[in-house]
Image (cartoon, rainbow, N blue to C red; front, top):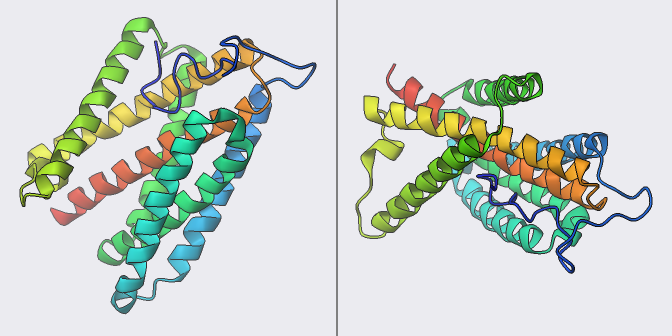
Length: 251
C-alpha cells in the first residue's frame, strides 16, 4: 500500500532500472542521513521564504508578491514532478524545490500576516508541533501504519485532491464550493479534517522512509525521502494557515 503523499509509493525505493532495491557498498540510505537532509531542505525553504518575505513592505508591495507566488508555485510543481519521475536527480532537484517552494510560501505568508498579524508564527509552530507529535506517536507505536490505516488515509487524501481540483475547475466558471475557503462552521470543520489528514500522511511518510532504510535503498533516496517529507510538511503548513485564517476571520 502506498503513502497518500504522491512522492512516496510502493515502488519509491525500488531501483528504476531493475525494479529491485540496490545498494553499493556503504552507499545506502540511512535514517540519520535522511533526517539530516530533511533539516537541510527545511533550512533552504526558510531561506527562500525569507527572500520573498523581505520583498513585502505593506499593501503597496502586494503587486510584487504575485510573480513571486506564481513563479514559486509553478517552479515548485515542476521541480516536484521532475523529482518524482527522476528519483536519481533528487540530490539536485530536492534542494532546488525547497528553495523555490520557500519563495512561494514566503510571499503567501506575508500576505496572510498583513491581514492576520501573528498568524504565520502560529502556523509554523503548529506545523512543527504536529510533526513532533506524529513522530512520537509513530515511534511509540501509538499509531501504526497498518494496511487498513494506509488505505483510509490514501483514500481520504485522494478525495481532498479531487475536491480541490473540482473547486478549481468551478472557479473558471465563476462558481466555487464555499466551504473550502469560507469561514462558516462547515468551512472550519472541512479545514480541520484536511489538517488531520495531512498530519496522518506524516505517519505514512515515516513508515515508507523506514522501509527504505531497512531495504538498504540507494544513497540518493535519502534526498528523495527528505523531499517527500517536506512536501507533506508544506501541505500541512498551508492547511494550518488556511484554518487559522478562517478562525481569526470569525473573531
